[in-house]
Image (cartoon, rainbow, N blue to C red; front, side, top):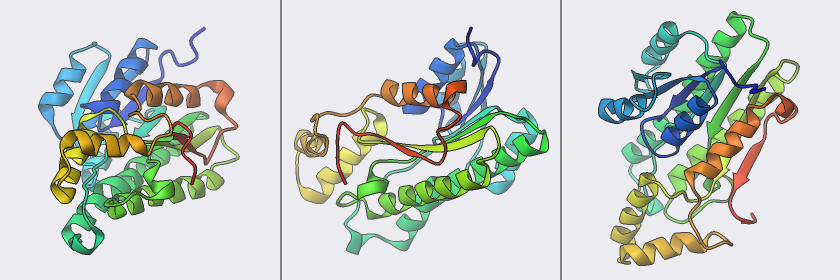
Length: 252
């Protein structure tokens, strides 16, 4: 029997990359899926894959838009705060605007998405739920030229650990996934930024990123997806407040 059948899933940042991978997997498990983001064309492309994938245009940094989102779609069983932003910069050249933009998406956006999601789960007295935040291995160990990104993702881990203690006596859990560099468009943008900062070619910058992994590779969206599906199983009730790494053996 498929435990996840008929469950409803909300995925922010669902129009591309790992968010799109999540949507495809959950709909294959007979879930009703909502993908959320700001790019209508990308969201429509994912939505067109299956009649059980719907989309909603929403800026996760805007509290009113998040509230409106939940008012429209109800209370999903599984909420995945995946929307994120990465930008490389030497710390001494990082502007306050750069800092704030990344914090707004990566930390404020996660806060608003999960806070409102948990509120709806509690208000509707649902006895089961999953809150999942996509953090990063960078939030655990730090990487050069990613100080702001690292700080935002470290904040997500702290949020998850704290909320887990508040909901520990319920059947709602909250966890963070902390991947290394993924084979996605976001990483390609990071490679381009690193090349501009350091003067390395794109291929040299890619190899530098791979060197962070003991397996000397980028990780796939599917690896993250399977971890999330595992966390959503009934047998995973005891996994709460964790920051689970997909990093090929990196130590920190």
